[in-house]
Length: 225
Length: 225
DNA sequence: TGTACATCAGTGAACGCGCGTTCACTGATGTAC
DNA sequence: TGTACATCAGTGAACGCGCGTTCACTGATGTAC
Image (tube, rainbow over all chains, first blue to last red; front, side, top):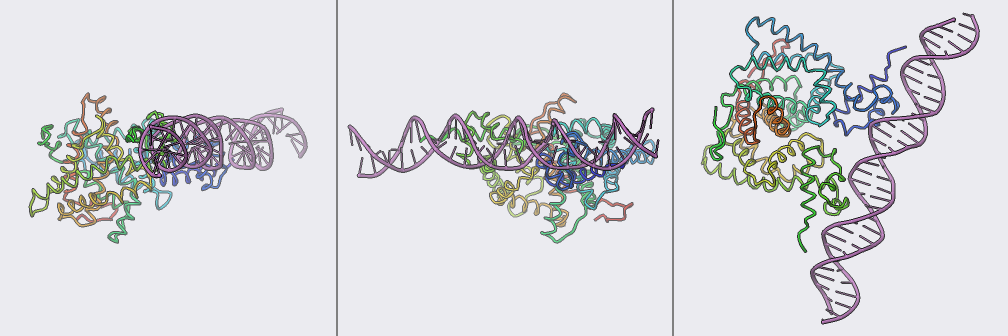
């Protein structure tokens, strides 16, 4: 029997619509009419809407996590005994994302936007699924970040990593809108690649800022370390 | 006639539920049963669910924008002819948020979370409403940022401001969850004030990073400026 | 080679449910004369 | 002071709608003997 084309059509339509509108704002009827398949086909092939959401993520995250794993292997091999620097680590991650073969021109935007939504929209099942499936490459990235910032305390590092994730997920999840605004304002065209290239130095500088805590004299609350 | 207590009860319940679950995931029935008022009271007092969402934002943003405006007045008066520095500007914003009188202990978290959601969830009507109502203090903040970073090109500044907003909105919108995780991991307690005090130096460093663009040798794409 | 059965992708129509909103109504309070 | 009316906050029940899911069914293809 020929591999079902319906499955791919559903995944393609769902991916685009989820990226555009979010998960709960996208109905199965929108997806199936965009994909030109029968409404019941989603439940037939995937079982439920939640399972479809997970399948959309799995389709791009599984190859990405392999690519990333190999890229980290390369990096550590190149570095020998000294741990990779923060810039190297961030850049390998960014480059792996940029270099992933994309189904369409907008593929990278969609990928980023979906990751941002996964982080942002409270889909409990999705969070659990991603933690189970992709804890390995994520944990490895965290380990590399730790080795690259030995000067930071665990608490400082924790918060700064959250700030990095926030800036990244947020910017990337609205990258289309932000590019449009910039185009209207200053007449400048921007690629997702360029946004990434601007983001990395921003993150690296923030991560390595010398003052982890701002002094709050008027509140008498914290001390600069 | 006594000022309706029902209105406040609805706003209180809606504020908490929106912050917990997002806008479209919170139904009027959840809100009215938490507030212990009749279902129809929301449409009676506010007209629609969207108008209720806007009223929740107006209740805390209107006093906040006055406070912020006065704080910027003070800052500019203190600085005389030289423009305020980046650190001063960021800190005045942060301090204004922290010092706002709160309806509850969790008030500041809720406030932050709602702002994050406003930015993140695609509620067209809300974006329009906020742009109309609060363009003034927002524009003033942007002007101060511009004067504090004369070394940046308009494009560089644009992207870095997005990165800042992203890190802030994102972290603050998940601040409760992130504090819980840190507590479980390292046994450390954290206040929202402390998160803000950590965020400001991170943002200031990123904003002032010397390299606006990362070199991408393998892609031959961009040049460092 | 022919026949009976199994498997599979896909379909059309309906299911029950929760949603935001509406409507006719009540009862208390204020106002005009 | 008494009466008729207007205004207002709030209510209970229902409305129509879109949602995810289910179910009985079709028709094509593969398999066993």
